[in-house]
Structure formats: structure tokens, C-alpha cells
Amino acid sequence: MSLQEYEPTAPGGGARLLTGVGAGLVSGLAVGGLMAWQGLIEAHGAYGWAVFAAYATVTGGLLGAIVGRRPYGTAVSASGGLLLGLLGWVVWWLTVDPLLRATTLTWSIAAARDAYPELVGSLLQGALAGTLYHLGTTLLPVRVGARRPPKIRAARPPAARVVIVGGGFGGVGAARRFERLNPRSDRFAVTLISDSNFLLFTPMLAEVASGGLEAQHISSPVRAAVTHTRFRHGRVTHIDIARRLVHLEGPGESVPYDHLVLAVGSVPHFLDLPGVAEHAFTLKSLADAARLRDQVLTMLERADQETDPVERARLLTFVVAGGGFAGTETVAELYDLTHGVLHFYPGIDPDEPRFVLVHSGKRILPELSERLGDYALGKLRARGIEFRLGVRVSSASDREVTLTDGRVISTATFVWAAGNRPNPLLRSLPGERGRGGSVPVDRTLRAFELEDVWAIGDCAHIPGPDGAPYPPTAQHAIREGKAVADNIAAVLKGRRPRPFRFTTLGIFVALGHRTAAGEIRGRPFSGLTAWLLWRGIYLAKLPGLERRVRVLLDWALELVFPRDIVVTGTQTTTPLTTRGPQ
Image 1: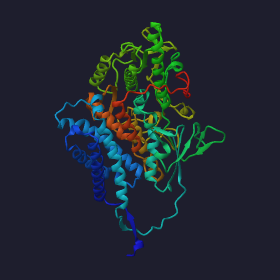
Image 2: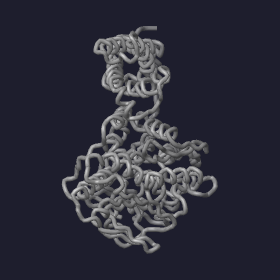
Image 3: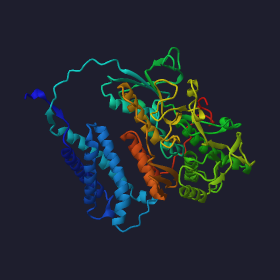
Image 4: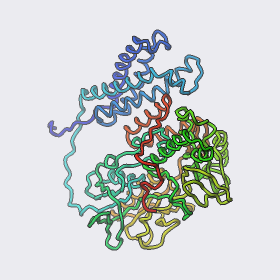
């Protein structure tokens, strides 16, 4: 067989692992020696540098096992090393090392501050190990494997035009699945249309509102997520089912389709309550989160200078409507934001800020078991958060919120998290609508009465095996996206689509102050353990290594430094500055 009949392949896993170990050892010796020379690891004994080198060797091996799976570039390898360095600092220097030295494990800000030199060293070592690893893999000899003779393929029919409307978890999940099913783009011509050019990781949105995370760190460009999908950044105004056209904002802008996937999500639903739409803040977008954070900080600035006790109390009262996941996380994060920055406002007593959560049910977090719901209620009440259960908001103004039991709460900040409804775009579709205006679909995700139209996510009414609809959560939307792509591919091949089936893996809610509550396969977790699981699971679900590194750095910096109090808005904050149609 001639040389031309062979083709190069990537280095083997054993070679990558040894390269990673070598990169970790070299970087650990270099950085550990430097830290020992500067006297930064004296607390770990005369041979602290050796301990550091051994720890670095392990992280280097992990680097070779994880990052080396694909031919990434130098920057990504260095970022992977940086991420492992940060994880190693948390696992080793904050957890294992104190236990080995028989000291108290606290996981406190003081402990993180004491281990700050090790944090700098771990990050430097990880980045250096990643760079050395990439340089090492470029020097490894490539293996060769036999090249298969090219196959003679018959002419294919024109690619089916698939249009996905919506760039959330469901829409991007469907596009990704199409790319895997269709690597050469010869079977499907997929177009994804979205009015935002990024995928927003909504489970972490409340942390952006509280200043715990940077807004850009929980959003990922759609174009980077689906590199082989045609992306159209625009707003869909109308869907012509008869002519199979998706009309976009702008003269003559339309996209034809053979199969249409609706993944347009939901918008806040204010139940036509007087004044609520005009005066409530929401938390559905990055703009909403930034606006809410600016509002809270602006109220603190104004209250710090206000002398009228009645007006001062109004400025420092924060009301949240809705006791589900969104409302509970929002009130907890706003509490943490306020009390985390009060030292900047010496004129405000810590007992002055007031937080009230209004919920129509008898207990908060009905998605969780009664035991966990009671645990969350007790934790939040112990911090001083007030609860108004069994009542609803009946109206709102710029100065107060009125409840159905007649009580009036004077406030300048009112957050609505008590209801959503499917995107109003669906009103343009013919046929009957489901609850709240959703698109009713069968168990294969195909819309009733609409030919070659499919719907997933918050905008669809998807029946489960027991007849009850699937919940509108991210974990369901991602899997619905994969399922709808598989079913469209099956239909185009002349096969029957499969019913969608999925069982919730777990649910978690952050309660602030390093506590959380949740369940995994029915097993309950609470407190610090649940908080660590919540952060670990959501971190793993973030799209892209770069975003995970950035979020980890945000969390690490939060342990050492206070939250920022810069008001980023250029004008007085109002709820409706960028809100779309309702």
C-alpha cells in the first residue's frame, strides 16, 4: 500500500496524558519554586513547593485527559489549565489541605483571603501548564491510519429547508442536533432566526441582577454555538402558513421553509392587573437584570441621603410577586446584593431594608417537596424576608403595591415573577391555541392543524405520558430540541417520528448566602451541599469552556472582594425602558 493511501490522525490518549503530566510537573516546579522563594507558601512547610508540584502534576494529567480530546488552540488549552487551576485551588487549598493540617474547614471569606497566594499560584500554574501542554502536543508524532477509498454517491435531492424560530435552549439545541445529523449540509439547509444574537443561560440570571456575575459571562454567541447553521439576526413579525414563509421585520424580508420549528419562548404575563405592566420590573433578559440591579443601587443611593422617614422606608422596600423558582431566587439575590454593599452606605442601618415576597399559594416553591419548601421558607424568614402567602397583587403604581386582601405596601421597587405566557407571535398562527396561547402539539412535537410545523419549549403545550404537560424548564427544552431534529430527519427519510419522553433529572433553587434546596431523582438536598451541587451542575451546563472559566473567576472573586456598586444606566431606571410587546 502506498504512502498516499494513509492519512494522519490525532496523537493517542496515552501520549496526551503523559504530555499533560509533564506540563503539570514542569509548571508546578517552576511556580512552586517561585512561590517558595517569595515566602508565599511557608505555612505548608519547608517542602511546600514539592506539595505544590505534586498537586500540579495531577492537574496536568487531568488537562491531558480532558482538553486533549480535540486539537484546540493555545488560548483554549491555557483557559482549560486556568479552569483546572481554579478548581484545584478550591478542592485542594480550601478543602483538602486544611483537613490534612488538622485545621478547621470553614469555606469562609477569611479562609479564601488567607489562601489568596495559593489562588494566584494555582491560576498561574494552570495557565502555564495549558500553554506547555499545547506546545508539547504539537511536537508529538502523528499516527497514520489507512485511508478508505472514496465512495461513489448517487445524486441527492435538494436539501430540505428547515427554519428554527428562537435562539433559546430549545432552538439552539435543535440546530446543534441538525449539525450532528447533517455534517455536510447536504440533507438539511437549516436557518435559525432570533431577535438576539446570543444564547442566554437564564438559570443564572438572578445572579446577574445581584451583581454576582457579569452579564456577558452567562451568554454565548449563537453563531459560535452553531457554526454550520445559517443565522439570521432579526425579529419575526408574521408566519404565513399557507405560503410557508417566515416574515421578518423590514421590507421584503422573508425566509421560506419546508419544515418550521417554533421555539420562541415566553414573555411576562401581567394578568391585565392595573398598573402592573407599567410599573413592575421583570427578569427575563440581560437588560432586565442590569436594569433591576441599577434600580436597587439607585434606591440605596437615594435613601442614604433621604431625611423623610416615610419616603426612606419606601425607597428601601423591595417587593417580589411570585413564589416559584424565579421569584424566590430573585428576592434572595436582592437581599444578598443589598446587605453585601451596605458598608458603602453608612447612613443606612442594616435593619432598614425590607424585602417582601407575595405568593398566591399556601407555600413557596410548589415545584419542590413540601419539606424542601418549608426549609427554604424558614431559611429566608430567618434572614428577615417577609412573606405574604395566599394573596395576590391586585394593582400597582409608582409608589405602592396593593394586595387582594386590601393591604398596601409602599415601595419604589416591584418585581413581577408571577406569570409568563407564550410569545405573542403565536397569535398570527391559524387554528386553536393551548393554555395561555401556546401551540398544542402531539407527543412527537408536531403541531396540530399546522402542516410541517413543530413546536418546543415554553411556547408549546407538550403532553407527557400521563397527559400532563411537560414543565417549561431548560433541561426539557434542550432535549425537546434534539428530539424535534431527530423526528424531522425521520419524516424526511419516510420513517415515523418517535414520541418525546423525558423524566426530570433534578431541580435546584438558590436561596442566597451559600444555601440552596433541590432534588436529584427524588433525593432531597439542602444547605451548603445543595448550593455546591447547584453551582457545579449549572457550571457544567454553561455553553463553552470560556464561559465556565469566566463564571468560576466571578465566583472566586466574590469570595474575596465586595460586589460592585457602579450604576451602569445612563438615565433614571424605569421598568419599561426596553420592554417588548406583551
